[in-house]
Length: 476
Ligand SMILES: *[C@@H]1O[C@H](CO)[C@@H](O)[C@H](O)[C@H]1NC(C)=O
Ligand SMILES: *[C@@H]1O[C@H](CO)[C@@H](O)[C@H](O)[C@H]1NC(C)=O
Ligand SMILES: *[C@@H]1O[C@H](CO)[C@@H](O)[C@H](O)[C@H]1NC(C)=O
Ligand SMILES: [Fe+2]
Image 1 (cartoon, rainbow, N blue to C red):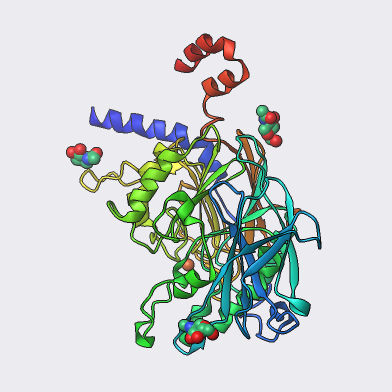
Image 2 (image 1 turned 45 degrees about the vertical axis):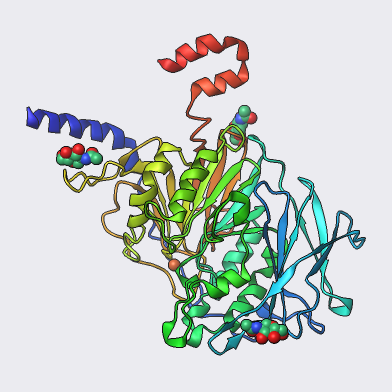
């Protein structure tokens, strides 16, 4: 009896995995064009804008829940200056102003400049806005485009970048990303790596701010915190975690009723994006746990079909680097990701690229010994894109053999793009730096976990009159 059921189980397992196993892929391609050292401080890449007290390190992020606001951030170094933004739909003809505020901080022997954050709200959807910050000869002008209104079929293109740092590899990633045509960055943590310097040299935060400005001043970067943002240095007297990060970056956490800027959600076009913090408490009954439980209940797939989760430490990853560091969050949240049919979970941390199949391990049971991830069509796809190109180099050692849950993995630098086409289809690419956007190295068509998997819903949408028959078809 027992033997028969094992056999039966095994053959079912085979049927499930058959086409999957064959297509598992570990790329042998490894190319590191440049050594993993940071670009020198005096490089043009980090050039300080000309003029007295000129605004520098300009970057924007979404400022509300639904994409009708941005927060514009910048730094001044000689004196605070105004925290004011002039903006308009017409270039050079500024007819509106917004008032922000500034903050500053010290970190051991480093003193920051004046870090300005200014909310610009009540914007129109799908509109190009020009903005100006600073005064006189030192004033600088930029622009951004607001997203389309939240709508189930609103197309939108996101880029996904992680573990960026400030090496020549980082620059290559950023340049390739900027040619991708994507409209907003989902950043999955580990920003400047300034904590790799003696006393966590804040000067490397400033160079990083100037480095990303070429993209981040013109389109929102949606922020997730990584371990390099913790900056816990009790021996230097620095015990407040995430101090530089929280001064330099803002997130619209209040709009999603979060109690912390470390975890929050935004809706943009046809996507509901949930940002989690791997390095803040998340076990049962903690604020992050309660918040996520509530936010998942808020998700309305009829309005935002695409449910995307960002975090730093991956839940599934078969590299030897950081192996199983996401396991505690997996134990806390994976069953919700399956229950709510999350489409994709993006993470960073591991400096290599990897994509999983739809798998789950929600039946893990320490008593019965049940411990293997199994195919699960309700589960998200897990993507690790911690390959932005920082000074720590690549994570070259994957576990061998490649686990069944792993679809594609490659230790090279790059970034991903996710193009949401409509409520059912999204095109996903991972772009290795050397190939640029023309030769995507990993390409997948994502079918929406809510709309594409449910015949009934699709047919109801098409033809309301055939409702009864369709319910019957669906119940088969
Ligand atoms: C912030 O800037 C003000 C004004 O220049 C200065 O008085 C204060 O000491 C600074 N605070 C920190 C923490 O550096
Ligand atoms: C875990 O396994 C044990 C032993 O097979 C079983 O009694 C228990 O119900 C399982 N727990 C869950 C939550 O499935
Ligand atoms: C959704 O987008 C896909 C990919 O572009 C396309 O093939 C499909 O026809 C679209 N569906 C609808 C209903 O427009
Ligand atoms: Fe990390």
